[in-house]
Length: 158
Length: 289
Image (tube, rainbow over all chains, first blue to last red; front, side, top):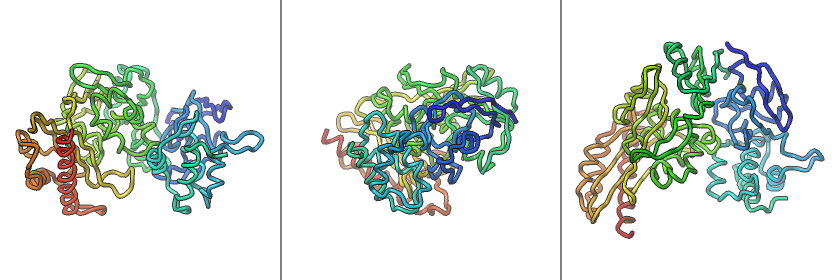
């Protein structure tokens, strides 16, 4: 069982830790980096709740080892809003369109939407639906989430 | 839902990686995209002593053209393949297949080498490789080996790879420009493994089918190829084809399983319908073109 010293940039801050090889990125972010905004649901790649951005791409943090994130740039939901509390457009769109109820799946969905629309990208309806199929939500019936995604993709979110 | 302990190494070169595989004598897992290995570890269905992470080996990633084929490096991410213009232009069947693989989030990590090595019978890549005549390139400490997809998939999750071999690339031969390509599947939810999946390539010259590839996923213990149907299609006029007859022949060459998701009879019925609908449509488009 090997131990590894890693340094990961999490929401712009360097986080150093000594981790077992088997530590997932999701567990590292919650336990070692204290970023509990990230939710672990199924822990085997089905639900999408634990989605984060690694080097700008939306990935499931339960399907990556922490040691694989060594030297990489990771953003969790805590890294989206401004310091003054102004929400990221993806968060604002989800709020405005009632895209959440219990909120368990929300951090993952917001990260996927933020990654898809980064740098002014305008994903198509098909691309939005395809990307959202990687998330399970048991509350909303998805309609509010889709409205939020469309609003965001049209660039009309606050 | 936590993996059992293991050791982890992350080599920089193929030579180092295959040396680790040779030394480990089978008690080892190769970590490429991890989109299947990580769940298997979490569920403790895989409990290797050592994990060899091949993600830092630059030589394993990328798309190039050589010897009439498009070569996809083993750790090329599915998202990269989906967006790659060389693949879209010269191996468009692979682009179509990739759009159906997993989810956006898993395609950002998942690789072609991982999917081919896993040999899930209901996955898109193995059947696409088989139908289009791909060749799998593998390395071990003893050298390079090229294995035709026809000889590669031996059973569920079982391939012709030796325990100390690493897939380094998959070569997709370029079919003629204008080849009609079909990759179609029926799954209960988007991103799930297919209940029935179909891959087909048709070359039509002067109103006749001059070459055909017909394959399936989710229709047997391995990806399946319907050689009799390929022969039956070849030489036929693209109009007035006995689609129902050839579909029945193609389905007769499969061996679908019976499980909680679908009966074998259901899979056969859906397969026949997919064949008739999509091949009919492809030939109609060909006539209109």
